[in-house]
View 1 (cartoon, helix red, strand yellow):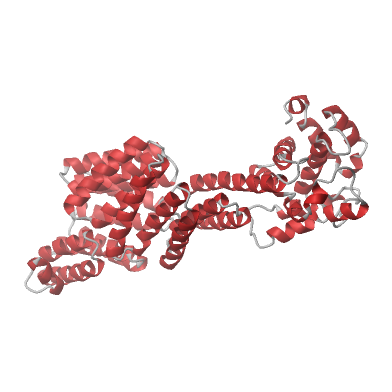
View 2 (cartoon, rainbow, N blue to C red):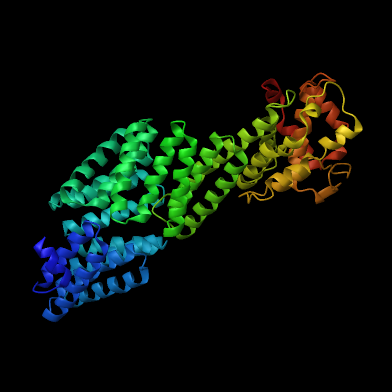
Length: 533
Protein backbone atom coordinates (compact mmCIF):
# COMPACT_ATOMS: atom_id res chain seq x y z
CA UNK A 1 0.00 0.00 0.00
CA UNK A 2 2.93 2.35 0.71
CA UNK A 3 4.32 1.72 -2.74
CA UNK A 4 0.88 2.35 -4.24
CA UNK A 5 0.75 5.73 -2.54
CA UNK A 6 4.19 6.61 -3.90
CA UNK A 7 3.22 5.44 -7.37
CA UNK A 8 0.31 7.82 -7.37
CA UNK A 9 2.75 10.74 -7.26
CA UNK A 10 5.62 9.05 -9.11
CA UNK A 11 8.13 10.36 -6.54
CA UNK A 12 11.18 8.31 -5.63
CA UNK A 13 10.42 5.27 -7.81
CA UNK A 14 12.19 3.77 -10.79
CA UNK A 15 10.35 3.41 -14.11
CA UNK A 16 10.01 -0.36 -13.65
CA UNK A 17 8.41 0.12 -10.24
CA UNK A 18 5.96 2.65 -11.64
CA UNK A 19 5.12 0.25 -14.46
CA UNK A 20 4.47 -2.56 -11.98
CA UNK A 21 2.22 -0.38 -9.84
CA UNK A 22 0.30 0.80 -12.91
CA UNK A 23 -0.32 -2.84 -13.87
CA UNK A 24 -1.61 -3.55 -10.36
CA UNK A 25 -4.00 -0.60 -10.58
CA UNK A 26 -5.22 -1.77 -13.98
CA UNK A 27 -5.94 -5.31 -12.75
CA UNK A 28 -7.75 -3.95 -9.71
CA UNK A 29 -9.97 -1.83 -11.94
CA UNK A 30 -8.56 1.51 -10.73
CA UNK A 31 -8.43 3.01 -14.20
CA UNK A 32 -7.62 6.61 -13.25
CA UNK A 33 -4.73 5.49 -11.03
CA UNK A 34 -3.50 3.16 -13.77
CA UNK A 35 -3.44 5.98 -16.35
CA UNK A 36 -1.56 8.26 -13.99
CA UNK A 37 0.98 5.56 -13.07
CA UNK A 38 1.58 4.54 -16.69
CA UNK A 39 2.12 8.20 -17.55
CA UNK A 40 4.61 8.51 -14.71
CA UNK A 41 6.39 5.33 -15.86
CA UNK A 42 6.68 6.70 -19.41
CA UNK A 43 8.10 10.00 -18.18
CA UNK A 44 10.61 8.27 -15.90
CA UNK A 45 11.64 5.77 -18.60
CA UNK A 46 12.29 8.62 -21.05
CA UNK A 47 14.30 10.54 -18.42
CA UNK A 48 16.36 7.49 -17.43
CA UNK A 49 16.70 6.22 -21.03
CA UNK A 50 15.09 2.84 -20.37
CA UNK A 51 13.54 1.96 -23.78
CA UNK A 52 12.28 -1.50 -22.76
CA UNK A 53 10.21 -0.06 -19.92
CA UNK A 54 9.14 2.83 -22.16
CA UNK A 55 7.88 0.49 -24.90
CA UNK A 56 5.87 -1.66 -22.49
CA UNK A 57 4.42 1.32 -20.60
CA UNK A 58 3.31 2.89 -23.89
CA UNK A 59 1.65 -0.35 -24.96
CA UNK A 60 -0.14 -0.91 -21.64
CA UNK A 61 -1.34 2.69 -21.55
CA UNK A 62 -2.68 2.15 -25.08
CA UNK A 63 -4.76 -0.77 -23.80
CA UNK A 64 -6.19 1.28 -20.91
CA UNK A 65 -6.94 4.25 -23.15
CA UNK A 66 -8.72 1.92 -25.56
CA UNK A 67 -10.89 0.59 -22.73
CA UNK A 68 -11.88 4.22 -22.12
CA UNK A 69 -13.01 4.45 -25.78
CA UNK A 70 -9.99 6.61 -26.70
CA UNK A 71 -9.12 4.39 -29.64
CA UNK A 72 -7.14 6.84 -31.76
CA UNK A 73 -4.96 7.83 -28.81
CA UNK A 74 -4.47 4.12 -28.13
CA UNK A 75 -3.32 3.50 -31.71
CA UNK A 76 -0.79 6.33 -31.52
CA UNK A 77 0.62 5.07 -28.23
CA UNK A 78 0.87 1.51 -29.54
CA UNK A 79 2.51 2.58 -32.79
CA UNK A 80 5.07 4.52 -30.76
CA UNK A 81 5.68 1.40 -28.66
CA UNK A 82 6.35 -0.58 -31.84
CA UNK A 83 8.79 2.07 -33.07
CA UNK A 84 10.67 2.10 -29.75
CA UNK A 85 10.94 -1.70 -29.78
CA UNK A 86 12.07 -1.81 -33.42
CA UNK A 87 14.74 0.83 -32.78
CA UNK A 88 16.19 -1.23 -29.93
CA UNK A 89 15.83 -4.45 -32.00
CA UNK A 90 13.66 -6.08 -29.35
CA UNK A 91 11.60 -8.57 -31.36
CA UNK A 92 9.40 -9.64 -28.47
CA UNK A 93 8.49 -6.08 -27.47
CA UNK A 94 7.80 -5.24 -31.13
CA UNK A 95 5.64 -8.37 -31.44
CA UNK A 96 3.70 -7.34 -28.32
CA UNK A 97 2.96 -3.97 -29.93
CA UNK A 98 1.87 -5.67 -33.16
CA UNK A 99 -0.41 -7.99 -31.20
CA UNK A 100 -2.03 -5.04 -29.44
CA UNK A 101 -2.40 -3.12 -32.72
CA UNK A 102 -4.12 -6.21 -34.06
CA UNK A 103 -6.50 -6.14 -31.11
CA UNK A 104 -7.38 -2.52 -31.83
CA UNK A 105 -7.98 -3.37 -35.49
CA UNK A 106 -10.13 -6.33 -34.47
CA UNK A 107 -12.47 -4.25 -32.35
CA UNK A 108 -12.76 -1.69 -35.15
CA UNK A 109 -13.90 -4.37 -37.58
CA UNK A 110 -10.66 -4.46 -39.57
CA UNK A 111 -10.51 -8.26 -39.55
CA UNK A 112 -7.94 -8.77 -42.32
CA UNK A 113 -5.57 -6.27 -40.71
CA UNK A 114 -6.11 -7.84 -37.31
CA UNK A 115 -5.37 -11.36 -38.50
CA UNK A 116 -2.22 -10.21 -40.28
CA UNK A 117 -0.99 -8.39 -37.16
CA UNK A 118 -1.56 -11.43 -34.92
CA UNK A 119 0.21 -13.80 -37.31
CA UNK A 120 3.12 -11.38 -37.81
CA UNK A 121 3.40 -11.07 -34.04
CA UNK A 122 3.70 -14.86 -33.76
CA UNK A 123 6.41 -14.97 -36.45
CA UNK A 124 8.36 -12.13 -34.87
CA UNK A 125 8.07 -13.04 -31.20
CA UNK A 126 6.57 -16.52 -31.06
CA UNK A 127 9.59 -17.84 -29.15
CA UNK A 128 8.25 -15.86 -26.19
CA UNK A 129 5.66 -17.97 -24.37
CA UNK A 130 3.90 -14.85 -23.08
CA UNK A 131 3.57 -13.33 -26.54
CA UNK A 132 2.48 -16.63 -28.07
CA UNK A 133 -0.19 -16.96 -25.40
CA UNK A 134 -1.67 -13.56 -26.15
CA UNK A 135 -1.47 -13.89 -29.94
CA UNK A 136 -3.19 -17.29 -29.85
CA UNK A 137 -5.81 -15.78 -27.59
CA UNK A 138 -6.51 -13.05 -30.13
CA UNK A 139 -6.61 -15.50 -33.02
CA UNK A 140 -9.22 -17.37 -30.98
CA UNK A 141 -11.31 -14.23 -30.71
CA UNK A 142 -11.01 -13.73 -34.46
CA UNK A 143 -12.18 -17.31 -35.08
CA UNK A 144 -15.10 -16.68 -32.72
CA UNK A 145 -16.16 -13.66 -34.76
CA UNK A 146 -16.18 -15.83 -37.88
CA UNK A 147 -18.37 -18.34 -36.06
CA UNK A 148 -15.72 -21.08 -36.02
CA UNK A 149 -16.11 -22.00 -32.36
CA UNK A 150 -14.12 -25.22 -32.64
CA UNK A 151 -11.15 -23.34 -34.09
CA UNK A 152 -11.57 -20.65 -31.43
CA UNK A 153 -11.38 -23.31 -28.73
CA UNK A 154 -8.20 -24.71 -30.30
CA UNK A 155 -6.54 -21.29 -30.22
CA UNK A 156 -7.66 -20.72 -26.62
CA UNK A 157 -6.25 -24.14 -25.64
CA UNK A 158 -2.86 -23.26 -27.18
CA UNK A 159 -3.04 -19.93 -25.39
CA UNK A 160 -3.61 -21.72 -22.07
CA UNK A 161 -0.68 -24.07 -22.73
CA UNK A 162 1.62 -21.11 -23.42
CA UNK A 163 0.47 -19.27 -20.30
CA UNK A 164 1.11 -22.41 -18.22
CA UNK A 165 4.58 -22.83 -19.74
CA UNK A 166 5.30 -19.22 -18.81
CA UNK A 167 3.96 -19.78 -15.26
CA UNK A 168 1.56 -16.89 -15.85
CA UNK A 169 -1.37 -17.59 -13.55
CA UNK A 170 -3.28 -14.47 -14.53
CA UNK A 171 -2.87 -15.31 -18.20
CA UNK A 172 -4.21 -18.79 -17.46
CA UNK A 173 -7.26 -17.17 -15.87
CA UNK A 174 -7.96 -15.22 -19.06
CA UNK A 175 -7.52 -18.37 -21.18
CA UNK A 176 -9.86 -20.33 -18.91
CA UNK A 177 -12.45 -17.57 -19.23
CA UNK A 178 -12.18 -17.58 -23.02
CA UNK A 179 -12.54 -21.37 -23.09
CA UNK A 180 -15.59 -20.98 -20.87
CA UNK A 181 -17.15 -18.55 -23.32
CA UNK A 182 -16.43 -20.80 -26.33
CA UNK A 183 -17.92 -23.77 -24.47
CA UNK A 184 -20.98 -21.74 -23.48
CA UNK A 185 -21.64 -20.73 -27.08
CA UNK A 186 -21.44 -24.41 -28.07
CA UNK A 187 -23.81 -25.50 -25.30
CA UNK A 188 -21.11 -27.49 -23.47
CA UNK A 189 -22.41 -26.48 -20.06
CA UNK A 190 -20.24 -28.71 -17.85
CA UNK A 191 -17.08 -27.60 -19.64
CA UNK A 192 -18.12 -23.96 -19.44
CA UNK A 193 -18.79 -24.14 -15.70
CA UNK A 194 -15.46 -25.83 -15.09
CA UNK A 195 -13.50 -23.24 -17.05
CA UNK A 196 -15.27 -20.33 -15.37
CA UNK A 197 -14.58 -21.86 -11.94
CA UNK A 198 -10.84 -22.15 -12.72
CA UNK A 199 -10.72 -18.57 -14.01
CA UNK A 200 -12.65 -17.21 -11.04
CA UNK A 201 -10.38 -18.88 -8.49
CA UNK A 202 -7.27 -17.35 -10.04
CA UNK A 203 -8.92 -13.95 -10.47
CA UNK A 204 -9.88 -13.95 -6.80
CA UNK A 205 -6.34 -14.87 -5.75
CA UNK A 206 -4.83 -12.13 -7.90
CA UNK A 207 -7.41 -9.48 -7.01
CA UNK A 208 -8.60 -8.99 -10.61
CA UNK A 209 -12.09 -7.64 -9.90
CA UNK A 210 -13.03 -7.16 -13.54
CA UNK A 211 -12.28 -10.76 -14.45
CA UNK A 212 -14.07 -12.02 -11.33
CA UNK A 213 -17.19 -10.17 -12.38
CA UNK A 214 -16.98 -11.44 -15.96
CA UNK A 215 -16.64 -15.03 -14.76
CA UNK A 216 -19.64 -14.65 -12.47
CA UNK A 217 -21.97 -13.01 -14.98
CA UNK A 218 -21.07 -15.44 -17.76
CA UNK A 219 -21.43 -18.41 -15.42
CA UNK A 220 -24.84 -16.99 -14.49
CA UNK A 221 -25.89 -17.32 -18.15
CA UNK A 222 -24.90 -20.99 -18.02
CA UNK A 223 -27.05 -21.39 -14.89
CA UNK A 224 -30.00 -19.78 -16.73
CA UNK A 225 -29.56 -22.21 -19.63
CA UNK A 226 -29.61 -25.08 -17.12
CA UNK A 227 -32.61 -23.61 -15.27
CA UNK A 228 -30.61 -23.11 -12.08
CA UNK A 229 -32.19 -19.77 -11.39
CA UNK A 230 -31.14 -19.30 -7.75
CA UNK A 231 -27.49 -19.82 -8.66
CA UNK A 232 -27.85 -17.55 -11.69
CA UNK A 233 -29.32 -14.73 -9.60
CA UNK A 234 -26.61 -15.10 -6.96
CA UNK A 235 -23.77 -14.90 -9.51
CA UNK A 236 -25.31 -12.06 -11.53
CA UNK A 237 -25.98 -9.92 -8.44
CA UNK A 238 -22.46 -10.56 -7.11
CA UNK A 239 -21.04 -9.45 -10.46
CA UNK A 240 -23.27 -6.37 -10.46
CA UNK A 241 -21.97 -5.36 -7.02
CA UNK A 242 -18.36 -5.70 -8.22
CA UNK A 243 -18.94 -3.69 -11.39
CA UNK A 244 -20.87 -1.05 -9.46
CA UNK A 245 -18.18 -0.60 -6.82
CA UNK A 246 -15.52 -0.13 -9.48
CA UNK A 247 -17.58 2.15 -11.71
CA UNK A 248 -17.56 -0.34 -14.59
CA UNK A 249 -20.84 0.89 -16.07
CA UNK A 250 -20.65 -0.92 -19.40
CA UNK A 251 -20.19 -4.27 -17.67
CA UNK A 252 -23.21 -3.64 -15.45
CA UNK A 253 -25.31 -4.01 -18.59
CA UNK A 254 -24.65 -7.76 -18.67
CA UNK A 255 -25.56 -8.19 -15.01
CA UNK A 256 -28.85 -6.33 -15.38
CA UNK A 257 -29.66 -8.39 -18.49
CA UNK A 258 -29.06 -11.75 -16.82
CA UNK A 259 -30.99 -10.71 -13.71
CA UNK A 260 -33.87 -9.72 -15.99
CA UNK A 261 -33.72 -13.12 -17.70
CA UNK A 262 -33.93 -14.88 -14.33
CA UNK A 263 -36.95 -12.84 -13.27
CA UNK A 264 -38.70 -13.59 -16.57
CA UNK A 265 -38.04 -17.32 -16.37
CA UNK A 266 -39.24 -17.46 -12.75
CA UNK A 267 -42.57 -15.76 -13.48
CA UNK A 268 -41.78 -12.19 -12.40
CA UNK A 269 -42.20 -10.27 -15.69
CA UNK A 270 -42.58 -6.79 -14.15
CA UNK A 271 -39.23 -7.11 -12.35
CA UNK A 272 -37.73 -8.59 -15.51
CA UNK A 273 -38.89 -5.63 -17.57
CA UNK A 274 -37.44 -3.15 -15.06
CA UNK A 275 -34.01 -4.81 -15.08
CA UNK A 276 -33.92 -5.20 -18.85
CA UNK A 277 -34.90 -1.59 -19.46
CA UNK A 278 -32.13 -0.55 -17.05
CA UNK A 279 -29.72 -2.66 -19.11
CA UNK A 280 -30.86 -1.02 -22.36
CA UNK A 281 -30.59 2.51 -20.97
CA UNK A 282 -27.14 1.91 -19.52
CA UNK A 283 -25.98 0.29 -22.75
CA UNK A 284 -27.12 3.34 -24.72
CA UNK A 285 -25.34 5.68 -22.27
CA UNK A 286 -22.08 3.73 -22.52
CA UNK A 287 -22.26 3.00 -26.25
CA UNK A 288 -22.35 -0.76 -25.66
CA UNK A 289 -24.10 -1.81 -28.86
CA UNK A 290 -23.87 -5.55 -28.22
CA UNK A 291 -25.27 -5.13 -24.72
CA UNK A 292 -28.12 -3.00 -26.01
CA UNK A 293 -28.93 -5.51 -28.76
CA UNK A 294 -29.03 -8.48 -26.40
CA UNK A 295 -30.99 -6.64 -23.69
CA UNK A 296 -33.51 -5.48 -26.31
CA UNK A 297 -33.97 -9.06 -27.50
CA UNK A 298 -34.55 -10.28 -23.94
CA UNK A 299 -37.08 -7.53 -23.31
CA UNK A 300 -38.90 -8.59 -26.48
CA UNK A 301 -39.15 -12.11 -25.10
CA UNK A 302 -40.44 -10.71 -21.81
CA UNK A 303 -43.14 -8.75 -23.61
CA UNK A 304 -44.06 -11.92 -25.48
CA UNK A 305 -44.62 -13.76 -22.17
CA UNK A 306 -46.99 -10.97 -21.15
CA UNK A 307 -48.96 -11.21 -24.40
CA UNK A 308 -47.66 -7.86 -25.66
CA UNK A 309 -46.81 -9.28 -29.08
CA UNK A 310 -46.96 -6.02 -31.00
CA UNK A 311 -44.44 -4.44 -28.62
CA UNK A 312 -42.34 -7.60 -28.75
CA UNK A 313 -42.06 -7.31 -32.54
CA UNK A 314 -41.11 -3.64 -32.28
CA UNK A 315 -38.31 -4.55 -29.86
CA UNK A 316 -37.13 -7.45 -32.02
CA UNK A 317 -36.88 -5.10 -34.98
CA UNK A 318 -34.79 -2.72 -32.88
CA UNK A 319 -32.55 -5.61 -31.81
CA UNK A 320 -32.17 -6.66 -35.44
CA UNK A 321 -30.96 -3.18 -36.41
CA UNK A 322 -28.50 -3.16 -33.51
CA UNK A 323 -27.05 -6.54 -34.45
CA UNK A 324 -26.66 -5.32 -38.03
CA UNK A 325 -24.71 -2.34 -36.71
CA UNK A 326 -22.44 -4.83 -34.98
CA UNK A 327 -22.10 -6.74 -38.24
CA UNK A 328 -20.84 -3.57 -39.89
CA UNK A 329 -18.25 -2.69 -37.27
CA UNK A 330 -17.70 -6.12 -35.62
CA UNK A 331 -17.82 -6.70 -31.90
CA UNK A 332 -16.40 -9.79 -30.28
CA UNK A 333 -19.31 -12.00 -31.30
CA UNK A 334 -20.43 -14.14 -34.21
CA UNK A 335 -23.11 -11.74 -35.42
CA UNK A 336 -24.55 -14.09 -38.05
CA UNK A 337 -25.32 -16.59 -35.30
CA UNK A 338 -26.94 -13.90 -33.16
CA UNK A 339 -29.11 -12.75 -36.07
CA UNK A 340 -30.14 -16.34 -36.84
CA UNK A 341 -31.29 -16.76 -33.22
CA UNK A 342 -33.13 -13.47 -33.47
CA UNK A 343 -34.97 -14.52 -36.64
CA UNK A 344 -36.14 -17.71 -34.94
CA UNK A 345 -37.48 -15.65 -32.04
CA UNK A 346 -39.07 -13.19 -34.44
CA UNK A 347 -41.01 -15.90 -36.24
CA UNK A 348 -42.15 -17.40 -32.94
CA UNK A 349 -43.53 -14.03 -31.78
CA UNK A 350 -45.20 -13.36 -35.14
CA UNK A 351 -46.82 -16.79 -35.06
CA UNK A 352 -47.96 -16.33 -31.47
CA UNK A 353 -49.52 -12.96 -32.29
CA UNK A 354 -51.40 -14.43 -35.24
CA UNK A 355 -52.62 -17.36 -33.11
CA UNK A 356 -53.77 -15.02 -30.35
CA UNK A 357 -55.91 -13.16 -32.91
CA UNK A 358 -57.23 -16.34 -34.53
CA UNK A 359 -58.14 -17.84 -31.15
CA UNK A 360 -61.31 -15.74 -31.19
CA UNK A 361 -62.37 -17.23 -34.54
CA UNK A 362 -63.22 -20.93 -34.24
CA UNK A 363 -63.21 -21.30 -38.02
CA UNK A 364 -59.72 -20.02 -38.79
CA UNK A 365 -57.46 -21.04 -35.89
CA UNK A 366 -54.10 -22.11 -37.36
CA UNK A 367 -54.91 -20.44 -40.69
CA UNK A 368 -51.93 -18.06 -40.71
CA UNK A 369 -49.43 -20.79 -39.89
CA UNK A 370 -50.77 -22.94 -42.73
CA UNK A 371 -50.72 -20.00 -45.12
CA UNK A 372 -47.08 -19.37 -44.14
CA UNK A 373 -46.16 -22.99 -44.87
CA UNK A 374 -47.91 -23.00 -48.25
CA UNK A 375 -46.57 -19.57 -49.23
CA UNK A 376 -42.99 -20.65 -48.57
CA UNK A 377 -43.53 -23.73 -50.72
CA UNK A 378 -44.72 -21.49 -53.56
CA UNK A 379 -41.75 -19.14 -53.02
CA UNK A 380 -39.38 -22.10 -53.38
CA UNK A 381 -41.21 -23.28 -56.51
CA UNK A 382 -40.60 -19.80 -57.97
CA UNK A 383 -36.90 -19.97 -57.05
CA UNK A 384 -37.01 -16.99 -54.67
CA UNK A 385 -34.04 -16.35 -52.37
CA UNK A 386 -33.87 -16.76 -48.59
CA UNK A 387 -34.62 -13.11 -47.85
CA UNK A 388 -37.72 -13.16 -50.08
CA UNK A 389 -38.87 -16.39 -48.46
CA UNK A 390 -38.40 -14.93 -44.98
CA UNK A 391 -40.39 -11.85 -46.04
CA UNK A 392 -43.22 -14.04 -47.28
CA UNK A 393 -43.20 -16.29 -44.21
CA UNK A 394 -43.34 -13.36 -41.77
CA UNK A 395 -45.93 -11.49 -43.81
CA UNK A 396 -48.07 -14.62 -44.01
CA UNK A 397 -48.03 -15.01 -40.23
CA UNK A 398 -49.23 -11.42 -39.84
CA UNK A 399 -51.40 -10.97 -42.94
CA UNK A 400 -54.67 -11.07 -40.98
CA UNK A 401 -53.48 -9.05 -37.97
CA UNK A 402 -56.11 -6.39 -38.73
CA UNK A 403 -58.89 -8.86 -37.87
CA UNK A 404 -58.27 -8.01 -34.22
CA UNK A 405 -60.52 -4.98 -34.90
CA UNK A 406 -63.33 -7.01 -36.44
CA UNK A 407 -66.13 -7.53 -33.88
CA UNK A 408 -66.23 -11.01 -32.39
CA UNK A 409 -69.89 -11.50 -33.29
CA UNK A 410 -69.09 -10.96 -36.98
CA UNK A 411 -66.10 -13.31 -37.02
CA UNK A 412 -68.13 -16.08 -35.40
CA UNK A 413 -71.51 -15.40 -36.97
CA UNK A 414 -73.40 -18.59 -37.87
CA UNK A 415 -74.40 -18.27 -41.51
CA UNK A 416 -73.42 -15.88 -44.26
CA UNK A 417 -72.45 -12.28 -43.60
CA UNK A 418 -74.59 -9.37 -44.74
CA UNK A 419 -73.13 -6.90 -47.21
CA UNK A 420 -72.47 -4.43 -44.37
CA UNK A 421 -70.78 -7.09 -42.27
CA UNK A 422 -68.70 -8.19 -45.23
CA UNK A 423 -67.60 -4.60 -45.74
CA UNK A 424 -66.39 -4.47 -42.15
CA UNK A 425 -64.37 -7.67 -42.60
CA UNK A 426 -62.86 -6.28 -45.79
CA UNK A 427 -61.37 -3.40 -43.84
CA UNK A 428 -58.96 -5.72 -42.01
CA UNK A 429 -56.04 -5.11 -44.43
CA UNK A 430 -56.22 -1.36 -43.72
CA UNK A 431 -56.59 -1.93 -39.99
CA UNK A 432 -53.61 -4.29 -40.14
CA UNK A 433 -51.42 -1.59 -41.67
CA UNK A 434 -52.52 0.83 -38.95
CA UNK A 435 -51.49 -1.67 -36.27
CA UNK A 436 -47.97 -2.12 -37.67
CA UNK A 437 -47.46 1.42 -38.97
CA UNK A 438 -44.86 2.27 -36.33
CA UNK A 439 -42.95 -1.02 -36.60
CA UNK A 440 -39.88 -0.81 -38.81
CA UNK A 441 -39.73 -4.42 -39.98
CA UNK A 442 -36.42 -5.94 -41.18
CA UNK A 443 -38.39 -7.40 -44.10
CA UNK A 444 -40.84 -5.69 -46.46
CA UNK A 445 -44.00 -7.33 -45.11
CA UNK A 446 -46.38 -4.36 -45.07
CA UNK A 447 -47.38 -4.84 -48.75
CA UNK A 448 -48.49 -8.38 -47.83
CA UNK A 449 -50.64 -7.12 -44.97
CA UNK A 450 -52.33 -4.45 -47.07
CA UNK A 451 -52.65 -6.19 -50.44
CA UNK A 452 -53.12 -9.92 -49.80
CA UNK A 453 -56.72 -9.63 -51.04
CA UNK A 454 -55.89 -7.79 -54.27
CA UNK A 455 -56.59 -9.71 -57.49
CA UNK A 456 -54.59 -9.66 -60.73
CA UNK A 457 -57.74 -8.74 -62.71
CA UNK A 458 -58.41 -5.69 -60.51
CA UNK A 459 -61.42 -7.11 -58.62
CA UNK A 460 -59.75 -7.29 -55.21
CA UNK A 461 -59.61 -4.93 -52.24
CA UNK A 462 -58.86 -2.54 -50.55
CA UNK A 463 -57.18 -0.56 -53.40
CA UNK A 464 -58.30 -2.49 -56.52
CA UNK A 465 -54.75 -2.88 -57.75
CA UNK A 466 -54.34 -4.60 -61.10
CA UNK A 467 -51.65 -6.81 -62.64
CA UNK A 468 -48.08 -6.21 -61.57
CA UNK A 469 -49.14 -3.28 -59.41
CA UNK A 470 -49.59 -6.01 -56.80
CA UNK A 471 -46.24 -7.00 -55.25
CA UNK A 472 -45.15 -10.58 -55.88
CA UNK A 473 -45.14 -11.41 -52.17
CA UNK A 474 -48.77 -10.27 -51.78
CA UNK A 475 -49.84 -12.30 -54.84
CA UNK A 476 -48.27 -15.44 -53.37
CA UNK A 477 -49.99 -15.01 -50.01
CA UNK A 478 -53.26 -14.25 -51.79
CA UNK A 479 -53.35 -17.50 -53.75
CA UNK A 480 -52.56 -19.73 -50.75
CA UNK A 481 -54.91 -17.70 -48.54
CA UNK A 482 -57.78 -18.56 -50.87
CA UNK A 483 -56.74 -22.21 -50.96
CA UNK A 484 -56.68 -22.51 -47.16
CA UNK A 485 -60.02 -20.70 -46.86
CA UNK A 486 -61.63 -23.18 -49.25
CA UNK A 487 -60.10 -26.10 -47.32
CA UNK A 488 -61.51 -24.79 -44.03
CA UNK A 489 -65.08 -25.37 -42.84
CA UNK A 490 -67.43 -22.42 -42.42
CA UNK A 491 -70.79 -22.16 -40.70
CA UNK A 492 -72.46 -22.00 -44.11
CA UNK A 493 -70.44 -24.71 -45.94
CA UNK A 494 -68.26 -27.75 -45.43
CA UNK A 495 -64.53 -27.72 -46.12
CA UNK A 496 -63.64 -28.63 -49.70
CA UNK A 497 -61.28 -31.46 -50.54
CA UNK A 498 -57.88 -30.68 -52.05
CA UNK A 499 -59.17 -31.53 -55.52
CA UNK A 500 -62.39 -29.56 -54.95
CA UNK A 501 -60.47 -26.48 -53.82
CA UNK A 502 -58.23 -26.65 -56.91
CA UNK A 503 -61.24 -27.02 -59.21
CA UNK A 504 -62.86 -23.96 -57.65
CA UNK A 505 -59.61 -21.95 -57.91
CA UNK A 506 -59.09 -23.02 -61.50
CA UNK A 507 -62.37 -21.31 -62.34
CA UNK A 508 -60.90 -18.04 -60.98
CA UNK A 509 -57.42 -18.16 -62.52
CA UNK A 510 -57.74 -14.55 -63.66
CA UNK A 511 -57.24 -13.55 -60.01
CA UNK A 512 -53.55 -14.49 -60.15
CA UNK A 513 -50.60 -14.07 -62.46
CA UNK A 514 -50.09 -17.25 -64.48
CA UNK A 515 -46.59 -18.02 -63.22
CA UNK A 516 -47.73 -17.66 -59.61
CA UNK A 517 -50.76 -19.93 -60.06
CA UNK A 518 -48.61 -22.51 -61.86
CA UNK A 519 -46.03 -22.42 -59.05
CA UNK A 520 -48.86 -22.81 -56.54
CA UNK A 521 -50.22 -25.85 -58.41
CA UNK A 522 -46.75 -27.44 -58.42
CA UNK A 523 -46.13 -26.67 -54.73
CA UNK A 524 -49.51 -27.77 -53.36
CA UNK A 525 -49.39 -31.43 -54.34
CA UNK A 526 -51.08 -34.62 -53.09
CA UNK A 527 -48.66 -35.04 -50.19
CA UNK A 528 -49.47 -31.57 -48.86
CA UNK A 529 -53.18 -32.29 -49.12
CA UNK A 530 -52.81 -35.60 -47.32
CA UNK A 531 -51.05 -34.02 -44.35
CA UNK A 532 -53.33 -30.99 -44.13
CA UNK A 533 -54.39 -30.06 -40.56
